[in-house]
Amino acid sequence: GGEGSAASGGAVRVASGNAGGAGSSGRLVFSSGTSQTGNSGAVLLGSGSGTAGRGGAATVSVGSGTSGGGGSTQLASGGSAATSGGSVLARTGEGTAASGGAIRISSANAGATGASGALRFASGSSKGGNSGRICAGTGASTAGRGGAVRVVIGSGTSSAGGVLVLQAGSSTEATGGGAGVASGRGAGTSSGVVRVRGANAGGGGSSGRLAFSSGTGATGNSGGAVLGSGTATAGRGGRAVATAGSGTSGAGGGLALVAGRDAVGAGAKGTGGRAVALGGEGTAASSGAVEVASAKGGASGGSGRLVFTSGTSKSGNSGAASFGSGGATGGRGGAVSAAVGSGTSGA
Image (cartoon, rainbow, N blue to C red; front, side, top):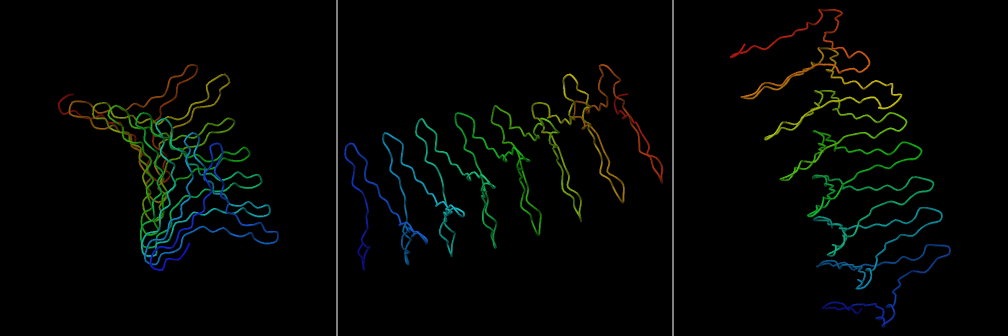
């Protein structure tokens, strides 16, 4: 278009003619030619810079359809028969004095009887090597806080909310992929917290359950479930606490530690799993205590009972119940005491 020395420059419009009653409108093809011994020519689409205003927008818009599906938009890089294929880069503009531009990828809202469009981010498959990675993250900050990464599922007004699944890849020949959730390291202070919780319940329901479980094993052992804190070289080891919720109009939640049982069926000969409560070892001082106690009773009730018993047996001896202290090589053996509480208004 022509230059406008005092006003806007002239526009350039390239368009095909409208179609007739039984045809399609003409195509528009912008392409560089092929090359036999060198690189083919590049195709550049962009707007000029603005010295005292905003840079012009570049828009790629596909036509809608009244009786069929809307047109598709495809961005595909070139393939290669000898080396790696071309890459696709979508990048916003840099803000030298303010924030950089945002990238937003979203599907359109659904109509009255349909679902909104799906968003799929996937790498291609591989025949002789590893498939491509998918990395989602924020950049580092030299004088501020690192950006957050949020994955939020939509709510449902007439049905259940959407599901969030994080699943590692399977393998037919080797071990399946791992799934890791780790907080950020604090080089000068504490590291970040990892919090996993169910949402609060509504007026007539229960809060969501939390299930931490390993998968089953068809021909070998099932995976272990480990909950613990890390070691400390110059401080105290972190605590591991399992607490059940209290109830305002009903009983408080129960806490059960149950070991696995042997397989049920003909020919089962294994022993059930053990349940062990063990205090920590003190290499230079006393080891940690193990305390089992019920909570104090309220104004009109008794304190909780403590029951130590072995299970029943159908065809053999029932299990023994043993209380004792360990041996001492350079001191006195520990005492075993059984004491009954006193009563202030009763026997």
